[in-house]
Image 1: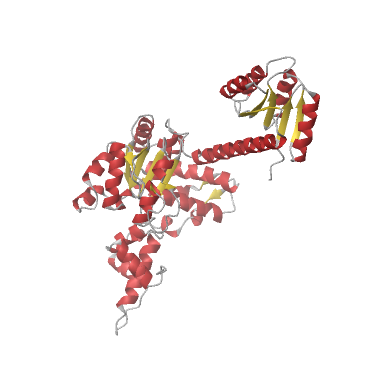
Image 2: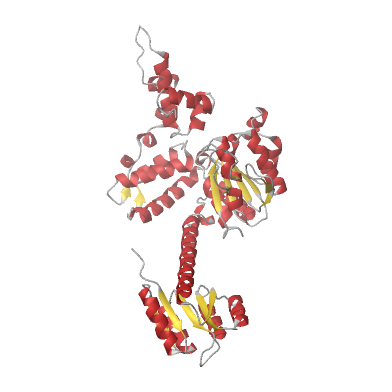
Length: 467
């Protein structure tokens, strides 16, 4: 719905000024209210909640600065532009200290006043948009959103709360994919004193190395071919807040060195920059890799590992705390009821039993996706086993793969005259990508090859553009 015109309250004891401002502002499309005294201004401000107030410093029944204080006390977000006589700069300065947005001096130029009003209203709109965005980002990121009754979840929530309220500037989240590392990172930020400052996230394998460096640290104009303007990186933009580095185990070694310097010295340089910039950010890093093995393989720096591991948090896979499966399921059903405007009341006992028995290789993320799918499929008020994927209801023996079933899963025939190895390879690459929902790093690990080798095969088989 398109918002209506802004409402402006004009407060001045001179009839001619009130009339003139009303005519000019109405022509600009604003709704205009008028008040002659301070008492009338306070009454209309409370009743009408105007978007902007033009307030004269001199009023017949009160000092305009006193009215400003009372307006701001009633609504700290009140947007007030003071009108002061020529030579009243001291009053204007005091008004700004009391929370006025701006001031204009009589006799004022009407075009300049209209520009001041327009800019003030744009600022108000921007503040509201930022507040709404922050509220949306924070929604679902409180301590209560870490759901579960197990000892593992209780310990996790206690640790998260302690870290959030501490001055810790580095946190390492470890655990399998889908265990909720993104949620824990957001909770740490929004439960901390940094909550009003930015929370910015980046996946360290989603961008090529040179782009990731520019994304994190920014770059100067002319630093490389496409650097046509200065760009601030995430660390600079998040000053006072939090930067979340997902999949840090796959960050290249030279970039790890720059990250270590930032952590230890609180300074960095933009790509192509010559001066150090200082920032105050909390860095939350996450990985599903075994970093100890990465250290042994020389793929991760020891000094960075131990610097990040000051506050390690391990998120256990869902199969290790199955008592949390049903509380999580009911939590997701309640969430999807709100989002889909549904009224699913419960899970059938048979469905509950199967959810509890299932091993959940995709952890909490898989559980959430399964329930979202089930709620789309059902038209009733109860989720039944038939609404769940077939593997959820299968017996453990049916779900345990054997060499024979794995071989049969490869969709190629094996006639006496043989098969083309390239076709088998193509099918295996596709299966690995399907099994990991397109995650190239995890698919490469399943195949026992590097990510670059996987990408080369994806281009070869037409799964990825070669451009």
